[in-house]
Image (cartoon, rainbow, N blue to C red; front, side, top):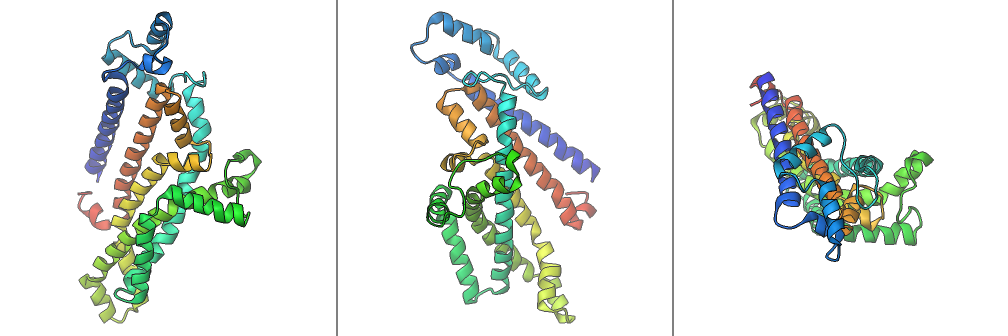
Length: 317
């Protein structure tokens, strides 16, 4: 197991380095002048030269990359040219919205999808299975931003149960903050729940065909006990894989939903940075979100060892 962990950690570090290098090459080295893009075509030459120096564009690309990477490792993400404040502070303020939003969405998705997938698999070939998978197919096809608008129209405008937009902050208490995140989290969770339900159903159907399930039933174990005690734990690996991918997607892919609900999160920040041509913020946020995806996938790899004892017995292979 130790060699496996060391190998996965090395892959994690190399992947993070490759992601940072790719982002730097795309935004800083490819043809085009980042300073001219920020200031616009009517920028004065002396202003352009000053920004070149401030951004370090007058130094070799390799030195700029190493300086940028070293600064990020020390928590220095630079300063925003739009907000004129440290980028680390902007990220710290916004992550308190995006991270709870993603966590709430993945929780809702799991609570909906796993029981639905297990229920559909246990009623395979029956009308209940067809109905559940039809609902999942519709969920896959519905765009989350359109679903968000429907949720606003029904729950905020018509019923007035939940706020339509904005975020009051966590200083006002846990309740108001969660109320503001329920609709956007639902808009993110329902399409993902549809995908996860289909994966859960497929994994369960494959597991229910295994010999040990038939053996358990032959020994007198009830179908319900065989389902939840034997089939569900052994079907978790593909489900956990999709959960890891979904959490990464929800954390990095909230740009549209946060703009629909005007939430001050990382997604809205990166949208505003792109609109304001604040490339320093865009570069740091893309690396941060890419790193979060890589780290979550690494955590999923480690979780496999806890779920499946066969992997531990095989040294993690």
